[in-house]
Amino acid sequence: MLRPSSGVLISVNGLGFPPQNLARVVVWEWLNEHGRWRPYTAAVCHHIENVLKEDARGSVVLGQVDPQLAPYIIDLQSMHQFRQDTGTMRPVRRNFYDPSSAPGKGIVWEWENDNNSWTPYDMDICITIQNAYEKQHPWLDLSSLGFCYLIYFNSMSQMNRQTQRKRRLRRRMDLAYPLTMGSIPKSQSWPVGTNSGQPCSCQQCLLVNSTRAASNAILASQRRKVYVGNSNGTLTVRQSNTFNGTALWSVGTMPTGGTAKMEQVRSPSGMQVTTFSRSQSAPTGTQLPGQNNLNRPGTQQVAILSTRASIPPGVPALPVKNLNGTGPVHPALAGMTGILMCAAGLPVCLTRAPKPILHPPPVSKSDIKPVPGINGICRKTKKKHLKKSKNPEDVVRRYIQKVKSPPDEDCTICMERLVASSGYEGLLSHRGAKPELVGKLGKCGHMYHLLCLVAMYNNGNKDGSLQCPTCKAIYGEKTGTQPPGKMEFHIIPHSLPGYTESKTIRIVYDIPTGIQGPEHPNPGKKFTARGFPRHCYLPDNEKGRKVLKLLIVAWDRRLIFTIGTSSTTGECDTVVWNEIHHKTEFGSNLTGHGYPDPNYLDNVLAELMAQGVLEANLKD
Image (cartoon, rainbow, N blue to C red; front, side, top):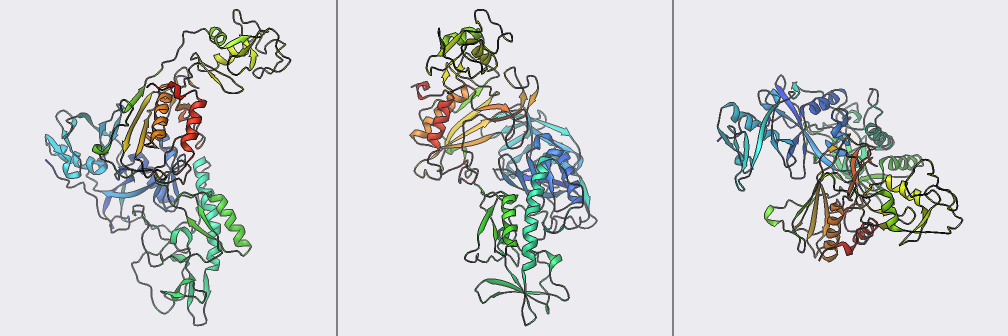
């Protein structure tokens, strides 16, 4: 057995820079929901380092180097990864490793997951495995790193010590991670200064730059008003609440002409202020607010000027949705509001809105229980199970009644009069479907040309069902075009806001990327699946279990997801939700996709009904 040795993280003086004249390998990592730091690929790390050298205060659009990371942006100032389609924020960090370790050699160790694809190990585990491999150890125990796995090099497999389950293992050569030597020039704080480079015109960069421009204008306006001179020669600086206590100036904007001393005083109005006395020096080695720290792990560091003052009465506080958090006000809207209020001489204070709680606390496997009254804990869908043997004309005739004397009104499909021939005459010919024939749907009574209904059916999923284009009434069993995947559901011992007396039903959807079938927009073309696995939540009560049962029916009918264009990122040929809303935010409702929401269960039941999924479909 081998203990971690030469692959451990190198201490870098707490500043995110290696010591002078000492070569180190740079690995950028992000923090997942389980508290594990996951490494970016070497190509992505090279891209981040290149952006860092050009503008250490900037943002990194990961989709420019890896199309699968198109929704993601890294803000180097806040050291967070931002996902544009879901609003998810994750801390990132910049770590340094020995050049002789696995990342320095471009060696990647991976294990095979349930989707038969390969997942890389965390970097510390990868380095430990490589060390044991180089020393020709026959096996390696990972319990010293907190994992109950054994690695067998002869069979290239990983075994779970508790379940005895084995997975395949592989060692792959890839691009070596970037190498750095000495220190990189320290960046100033955002939003001080501007970027002289040519701005990118992609959608992600436009979002970031518009956010930054609006904030720059507000901060510049407030910075001009922040200094107040006293008769005793002391320069007083009002403490601002902007961005959760971060000061509005950087080292470059401190008073000149002498050294400064900082102290907390009270103004006559009772507002807490910070004063700079030019006779003494501020303590050295203390990081002032506004300075960037490239190696901080996402939590904001405490500094001398981070004491927050209460917002004075009458000063409006605008929760801002920006790269440092989420809230109800868009950054551009908040920025323009602040500019107008400042120009009018009105005080305004931008505050950081609280972050959404997307996931519950960690849950052990022993605490996860099946949902009572529901068989199993998983559903899988295969590539295609559509009913295809029916002739389109026979399907349509099954649901309509022939109208001998149609009224003189429009057919809402072809927009021709019902007393005239169908607009599809000459474009579509079917044996027995004459252009002038009109039929009335049985349940809703709406009337259309028979040939128009056949054309509409041919343009749909061709699953043996029909949906009225006027009232959306469904005839037959409607199925969708959801790609193959897996749906899991179980109970976790935590409560949702608004349902403190109940536990929680967690649903996990997982759909891999694949090739579009004949029922999809672009048959034969690859489709992407962003953000999977997706976690959704229901209260574990009677109505919550009813919703789960109906969602299982909808999943079996392939109605939960479809392939189309993302409304948030604009990406085409990707898996998107299909008009059945889910709650993906566990402990809050800041994004509108969480709890408390007393009307959600009734709303989703109505959405399921609109898809033809009814309580009558449930089996006792």
